[in-house]
Length: 234
Image (cartoon, rainbow, N blue to C red; front, side, top):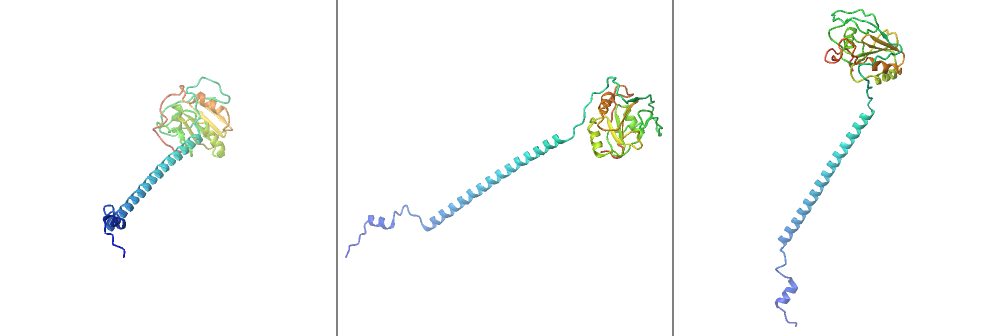
């Protein structure tokens, strides 16, 4: 019969160090804490990834918007630029006239078609592009301020009209259709007029250089905005 060994050493070897052992309750608590910590880390990782995704989306969106804006700016048609005032240059085909410049409330029978000066309505036509014919008496008042009135036969092609628009400055110009013109396109300044057959005619730019915002009009420098918008203002 083997004698029983009740010494402390034998107890420690079979049951472990009681000081270092955890109860079942403590073990479960430790497991819960570990799971909670792992959950928190996972949630933190997801929040971090979400922030990165949002920031990336914002940066990407800003880049796309910037690219679109740049593309639009680069592809937008640019207005032509001209010197104001004129130099007295002679342009082939330009006719000049001497017209009165009284303010009237009635319709006027103009000697030129379209009018290139004369008595006119007290309210000027706001400069811009119009898709419908305009009242002569208002448009003539704009000529008095140095604007150029570009009229075209409504039957011209869309390509011709686009080419014509590319020749226009950004201000002090009126573009509108006009019935029964003597030529497909007519440019009128105060007391000056040019008839052309094609929008590609180089004399269009020459006419603007000489008569646009001319100092020879009755009211140079007066406004071409702030009055009357005609029908079909684009």
